[in-house]
Image: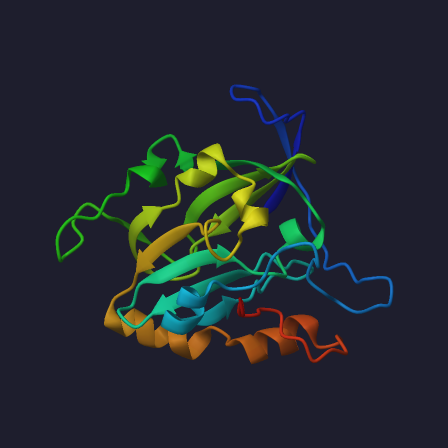
Length: 217
Protein backbone atom coordinates (compact mmCIF):
# COMPACT_ATOMS: atom_id res chain seq x y z
CA UNK A 1 0.00 0.00 0.00
CA UNK A 2 1.27 3.46 -0.87
CA UNK A 3 0.96 6.32 1.57
CA UNK A 4 1.96 9.97 1.35
CA UNK A 5 4.29 11.05 4.13
CA UNK A 6 4.16 14.82 4.54
CA UNK A 7 7.46 16.42 5.50
CA UNK A 8 9.61 13.35 4.93
CA UNK A 9 13.06 14.27 3.68
CA UNK A 10 14.72 10.90 4.12
CA UNK A 11 16.33 11.73 7.49
CA UNK A 12 15.76 9.51 10.49
CA UNK A 13 13.76 10.56 13.52
CA UNK A 14 11.52 13.02 11.68
CA UNK A 15 7.85 12.89 12.68
CA UNK A 16 5.56 12.60 9.68
CA UNK A 17 1.83 12.93 9.09
CA UNK A 18 0.72 9.93 7.06
CA UNK A 19 -2.16 10.21 4.60
CA UNK A 20 -3.41 7.46 2.33
CA UNK A 21 -2.80 8.13 -1.34
CA UNK A 22 -3.85 5.88 -4.20
CA UNK A 23 -1.55 5.41 -7.16
CA UNK A 24 -3.65 4.97 -10.34
CA UNK A 25 -2.21 3.24 -13.35
CA UNK A 26 -1.14 6.11 -15.59
CA UNK A 27 -1.12 5.74 -19.38
CA UNK A 28 1.61 7.11 -21.59
CA UNK A 29 0.95 9.97 -24.00
CA UNK A 30 -0.45 7.60 -26.64
CA UNK A 31 -2.84 5.94 -24.19
CA UNK A 32 -0.81 2.74 -23.80
CA UNK A 33 0.65 1.38 -20.60
CA UNK A 34 4.39 0.83 -20.51
CA UNK A 35 7.20 0.34 -17.98
CA UNK A 36 9.83 3.01 -17.59
CA UNK A 37 12.34 2.86 -20.46
CA UNK A 38 15.04 4.35 -18.24
CA UNK A 39 15.24 1.26 -16.00
CA UNK A 40 17.70 -1.51 -16.99
CA UNK A 41 15.32 -4.47 -17.22
CA UNK A 42 17.83 -6.87 -18.76
CA UNK A 43 18.45 -10.01 -16.74
CA UNK A 44 21.92 -11.26 -15.83
CA UNK A 45 22.54 -14.51 -17.70
CA UNK A 46 22.85 -16.62 -14.54
CA UNK A 47 19.39 -15.51 -13.42
CA UNK A 48 17.76 -16.11 -16.79
CA UNK A 49 19.24 -19.61 -17.04
CA UNK A 50 18.68 -20.83 -13.47
CA UNK A 51 15.46 -19.13 -12.42
CA UNK A 52 11.89 -19.08 -13.71
CA UNK A 53 9.88 -15.86 -13.37
CA UNK A 54 6.39 -15.40 -11.98
CA UNK A 55 4.55 -12.16 -11.28
CA UNK A 56 2.30 -11.11 -8.39
CA UNK A 57 -0.47 -8.86 -9.69
CA UNK A 58 -1.85 -6.28 -7.26
CA UNK A 59 -5.58 -7.06 -7.05
CA UNK A 60 -6.62 -3.68 -5.64
CA UNK A 61 -8.52 -1.29 -7.89
CA UNK A 62 -6.46 1.58 -9.35
CA UNK A 63 -3.22 0.14 -7.99
CA UNK A 64 -0.33 -1.73 -9.56
CA UNK A 65 2.12 -2.44 -6.75
CA UNK A 66 3.17 -5.64 -8.51
CA UNK A 67 6.13 -7.82 -7.58
CA UNK A 68 8.19 -10.46 -9.34
CA UNK A 69 9.48 -13.80 -8.06
CA UNK A 70 12.58 -15.48 -9.46
CA UNK A 71 12.14 -19.14 -8.57
CA UNK A 72 15.05 -21.58 -8.47
CA UNK A 73 14.60 -25.32 -8.93
CA UNK A 74 15.42 -25.79 -5.22
CA UNK A 75 12.35 -23.62 -4.29
CA UNK A 76 14.35 -20.52 -3.37
CA UNK A 77 12.26 -17.49 -4.32
CA UNK A 78 13.93 -14.12 -4.89
CA UNK A 79 11.49 -11.23 -4.43
CA UNK A 80 11.83 -8.08 -6.55
CA UNK A 81 9.62 -5.25 -7.77
CA UNK A 82 7.91 -5.75 -11.14
CA UNK A 83 8.30 -3.29 -14.05
CA UNK A 84 4.71 -2.10 -13.53
CA UNK A 85 5.32 -0.99 -9.93
CA UNK A 86 4.58 2.74 -9.43
CA UNK A 87 8.18 3.42 -8.38
CA UNK A 88 9.20 2.73 -11.97
CA UNK A 89 6.04 3.75 -13.78
CA UNK A 90 5.85 7.15 -12.06
CA UNK A 91 9.63 7.68 -12.19
CA UNK A 92 9.92 7.94 -8.41
CA UNK A 93 13.28 7.98 -6.63
CA UNK A 94 13.76 5.56 -3.68
CA UNK A 95 15.59 7.28 -0.83
CA UNK A 96 15.12 4.77 1.99
CA UNK A 97 14.46 1.05 2.43
CA UNK A 98 13.49 -0.02 5.96
CA UNK A 99 13.19 -3.62 7.14
CA UNK A 100 12.07 -2.63 10.66
CA UNK A 101 8.37 -2.93 9.89
CA UNK A 102 7.13 -2.50 13.48
CA UNK A 103 8.46 -2.04 17.00
CA UNK A 104 8.69 -5.80 17.46
CA UNK A 105 9.57 -6.99 13.96
CA UNK A 106 12.81 -6.37 12.11
CA UNK A 107 13.12 -8.42 8.92
CA UNK A 108 16.88 -7.86 8.78
CA UNK A 109 17.21 -10.00 11.92
CA UNK A 110 15.82 -13.09 10.17
CA UNK A 111 18.73 -15.51 9.90
CA UNK A 112 18.19 -19.10 8.77
CA UNK A 113 20.47 -21.83 10.10
CA UNK A 114 20.84 -25.48 9.14
CA UNK A 115 18.82 -27.65 6.80
CA UNK A 116 15.57 -26.80 8.60
CA UNK A 117 16.26 -23.05 8.32
CA UNK A 118 15.85 -22.49 12.05
CA UNK A 119 15.68 -18.87 13.12
CA UNK A 120 14.00 -17.71 9.93
CA UNK A 121 10.92 -15.55 10.28
CA UNK A 122 7.76 -17.00 8.71
CA UNK A 123 5.92 -14.85 6.20
CA UNK A 124 2.26 -15.02 5.19
CA UNK A 125 1.02 -13.76 1.82
CA UNK A 126 0.17 -10.34 3.21
CA UNK A 127 3.21 -9.94 5.45
CA UNK A 128 5.17 -6.73 4.98
CA UNK A 129 8.80 -7.33 4.01
CA UNK A 130 9.97 -3.71 3.98
CA UNK A 131 8.99 -0.07 3.59
CA UNK A 132 10.30 1.90 0.62
CA UNK A 133 10.26 5.71 0.91
CA UNK A 134 10.58 7.88 -2.19
CA UNK A 135 11.81 11.43 -2.62
CA UNK A 136 8.27 12.74 -3.22
CA UNK A 137 7.18 11.51 0.22
CA UNK A 138 5.39 8.35 -0.93
CA UNK A 139 5.90 5.21 1.14
CA UNK A 140 5.28 1.71 -0.19
CA UNK A 141 4.71 -1.31 2.04
CA UNK A 142 6.17 -4.22 0.07
CA UNK A 143 4.42 -7.50 0.91
CA UNK A 144 5.77 -11.00 0.37
CA UNK A 145 2.80 -12.27 -1.66
CA UNK A 146 3.64 -15.86 -0.69
CA UNK A 147 3.96 -18.01 2.42
CA UNK A 148 7.41 -19.18 3.43
CA UNK A 149 10.49 -18.78 5.57
CA UNK A 150 12.38 -15.52 5.17
CA UNK A 151 15.96 -16.65 4.62
CA UNK A 152 17.41 -13.17 4.18
CA UNK A 153 16.68 -9.62 3.11
CA UNK A 154 18.90 -7.47 0.94
CA UNK A 155 20.45 -5.27 3.61
CA UNK A 156 22.51 -3.47 0.94
CA UNK A 157 19.34 -1.54 0.13
CA UNK A 158 19.52 0.13 3.54
CA UNK A 159 22.72 1.90 2.49
CA UNK A 160 22.04 2.03 -1.25
CA UNK A 161 18.28 2.30 -1.96
CA UNK A 162 19.10 3.45 -5.49
CA UNK A 163 19.83 -0.19 -6.36
CA UNK A 164 16.06 -0.63 -6.68
CA UNK A 165 16.22 1.56 -9.78
CA UNK A 166 19.74 0.86 -10.98
CA UNK A 167 19.65 -2.96 -10.80
CA UNK A 168 16.05 -4.03 -10.06
CA UNK A 169 16.52 -7.67 -11.12
CA UNK A 170 19.94 -8.31 -9.58
CA UNK A 171 21.55 -6.25 -6.80
CA UNK A 172 18.23 -4.51 -6.18
CA UNK A 173 16.33 -7.62 -5.09
CA UNK A 174 14.35 -7.37 -1.84
CA UNK A 175 14.42 -10.75 -0.11
CA UNK A 176 14.89 -14.50 -0.44
CA UNK A 177 11.99 -16.68 0.69
CA UNK A 178 11.73 -20.47 0.99
CA UNK A 179 8.17 -21.88 0.68
CA UNK A 180 7.43 -25.52 1.42
CA UNK A 181 6.57 -27.95 -1.39
CA UNK A 182 2.80 -27.54 -0.98
CA UNK A 183 3.04 -23.76 -1.06
CA UNK A 184 5.35 -23.97 -4.06
CA UNK A 185 2.63 -25.82 -5.95
CA UNK A 186 0.11 -23.12 -5.00
CA UNK A 187 2.51 -20.39 -6.14
CA UNK A 188 2.99 -21.96 -9.56
CA UNK A 189 -0.78 -22.36 -10.00
CA UNK A 190 -1.82 -18.87 -8.85
CA UNK A 191 0.91 -16.44 -9.90
CA UNK A 192 1.29 -15.26 -13.50
CA UNK A 193 3.98 -16.07 -16.03
CA UNK A 194 5.42 -13.27 -18.14
CA UNK A 195 2.93 -13.71 -21.00
CA UNK A 196 -0.08 -13.49 -18.67
CA UNK A 197 1.51 -10.58 -16.82
CA UNK A 198 2.00 -8.61 -20.03
CA UNK A 199 -1.55 -9.37 -21.12
CA UNK A 200 -3.01 -8.21 -17.81
CA UNK A 201 -0.85 -5.15 -17.27
CA UNK A 202 0.23 -4.06 -20.74
CA UNK A 203 -2.37 -5.51 -23.09
CA UNK A 204 -2.56 -2.25 -25.05
CA UNK A 205 1.14 -2.09 -25.91
CA UNK A 206 1.66 -2.56 -29.64
CA UNK A 207 5.16 -3.97 -29.46
CA UNK A 208 6.95 -7.28 -29.94
CA UNK A 209 9.59 -6.45 -27.33
CA UNK A 210 9.21 -8.37 -24.02
CA UNK A 211 9.12 -6.46 -20.73
CA UNK A 212 11.97 -8.55 -19.40
CA UNK A 213 14.98 -9.16 -21.62
CA UNK A 214 18.08 -11.29 -21.32
CA UNK A 215 21.52 -9.74 -21.56
CA UNK A 216 23.29 -10.83 -24.74
CA UNK A 217 26.73 -9.48 -23.98
